[in-house]
Amino acid sequence: MGINTESEIEANLQIGPTDQGFVRIYIEAKGIEIPMDFDPEEAEEIAEEIRAAAATARQVSK
Image 1: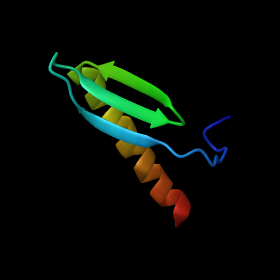
Image 2: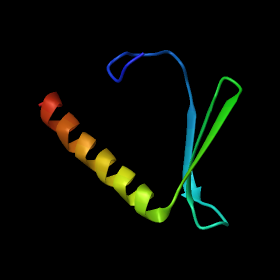
Image 3: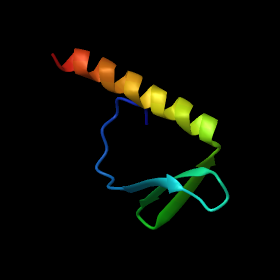
Image 4: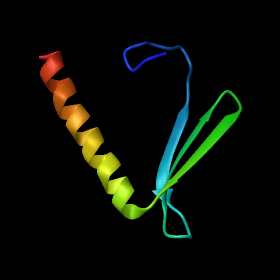
């Protein structure tokens, strides 16, 4: 499965700080739980990548 492959899988996504000073991205789908912890700098880099992808997606959809 790649970035352009559609899927019928539904998932829940939660993002928030942990009590250990990390940012957690938590994904739950079909009984699978995936917690991913990032230090604040890594989380900011991920946020920048998401913003860049959103900007590119806007251009594609025009």
